[in-house]
Length: 531
Image 1 (cartoon, rainbow, N blue to C red):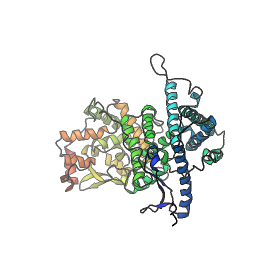
Image 2: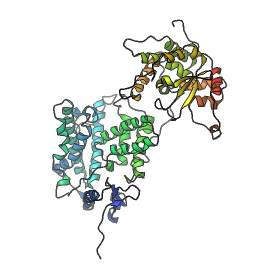
Image 3: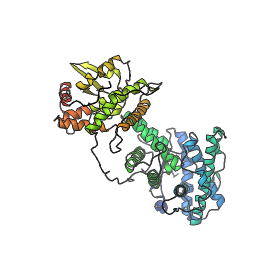
């Protein structure tokens, strides 16, 4: 009776073919799992058979190397293995070569000869970066050995680490040339195929497989997440994390990512200034943004049978509660000072009329609504109406991002009417009041810039770093509502907070109820003499 030949396995739900093979008992401890499971990335049976053969060859070579036990590498062999790191690093940064800030080429000369030391008081900055570069090379060495199933002695490990460092140095120097236009971008695209890698040598057979990229996983996850209602801001945040993670790894192969990689990236983020802000991110930011993104994306990949394990699972940071040195909201004096500055604001030269209008009106609207600054910043002329004797402002996802994804109405306070906000709206052109949309109608980009300008405007008046210049209004609004003895359910509905209990989900908070509540709020005492 003929034995059935191993063949691609079609996933019963998706129809995508997979490579599945049980790990031999003698290798399970070394491999760390009972089954090799790799997606072949296709539903076409003929293409799947070709990919299956490649993966099978790669697995056989890795198993063969593991069975061979510890071995020594010559320097030539080490450099051959390191070429993969060179190509991944070069191709991973080729689109934006100036954004490669991890590898500092000027520190390479004494990378392995100079130890981390101090000048008697503080650690020298270059020594810290050099130490990080060495640790980064060791991480990539571990990845390389795992990829090829190699076990080597200590000397060979050091040879491979140095070879990988040399590969990063060569690639980074090419990126410098690419950034200056010295070399043609087309040369980078062909670099990976230009050399003979260990995978193409008879001794190692064909170890190259079609990679499952981290970037590709992110985009696939987003297609599903977007359909489920996730916000564009989530895509932007996760995109930055994935881009930074891939740059840190020096490759974009999701099947090679290990828990140690995630831990190393976490440590890197906690000690390295952000390229966008120039500041080292807080532990809370790394936990809630970076680690959350990686856990979500890799978790989705595991659930959808694209990866066998989630390498970010269980990786976390213990975040202590930050000392609160003052109330989270503005004080009455601070609010009065900001509102006075807004009321008497004079546009600066070449400032857009919409930006000047934002600085004049947004603080007032936030003060009497508790809305997020971004929700007010994306308001359109059609979002303000007169109904049943009230001027009403509508926060709606039609205008842009709303955290709860639900529209809500806010009755304007009489002081806003006295100041003439309704007249400003009636005189405005249709469309956004405070931003100028992009060429394709995009509001998110211009709104992000406006939020930064509003922070700067408030910071000039209230420099205290212990209060958030944009979010302080929500806390102040709640405080004023409590002082005015307004029912919590009503002011929560005005602010767009989710219902706290099942009972709160019954019945509606009407415009009449909101108007009665808003009128209980006292007027702000501001300096209007310059109006």
